[in-house]
Length: 296
Ligand SMILES: Cc1ncc(COP(=O)(O)O)c(C=O)c1O
Image (cartoon, rainbow, N blue to C red):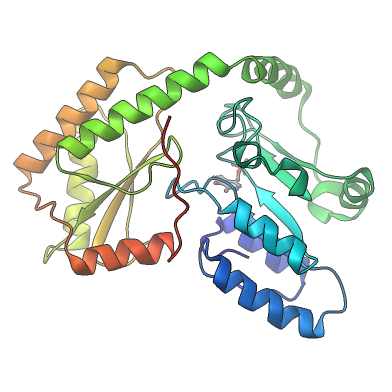
């Protein structure tokens, strides 16, 4: 399991009662070391579990390298693409489509709670795998199925997503404008690989709680709804905002957001310089290997 996996993945791994190992975030070397060790004594299958587009940090799983390792070590891949499905790839089929490796993913998981603006989720795999999950997963067997009103609305959303190339292009454009605006204002933007926009504020000597509560309420008062993330989710010394631009945001929304960040920078006297220690902390979050992808 990738170290940066979402809490629901961690819970799923623990509930499976399978033996598990954690590899460094997005680090094929660390994954390979683990696969080698596991293969020395394995008695059953090996599943590599990770996200496709990391919801918190916006970086993408290094799928080309990880898929090559899966084949080399005879493993399988479970991809939680909650943040990639409907968003990444030409047809919105997700992060694996983006990298052209859809056929290498053994279990593809998506939620309807992000791009589909609803509730519920799905796993897609070979029929025998899905049948096994259907009849063996306690959370599936003993849970109510999705109410029909959601199913019906999701069928409509599905059509919109399938024909949603213009919306996806618009979303990338809004994301690019937001990132460029914040970058110009002196903020450090974590990853450019997906539309997700993580913004890092170095704390310097300031108190994390003082900064944390002040920046979030400052922006909210200016009409910008942001989520703030701090230690223990990310290393001490940094505060992070995570923003998810959408196709329905406008140029005016971006303008308002960038202006709010600029006045926050000035009014709260934030020192935005990212020094050596801050860079080390950011590297700790993203892992040692970053897949270079340009925003188009
Ligand atoms: C990577 C990932 N997987 C799964 C989930 C859970 O999705 P849901 O809200 O549909 O339970 C989330 C939600 O934040 C997520 O980010």
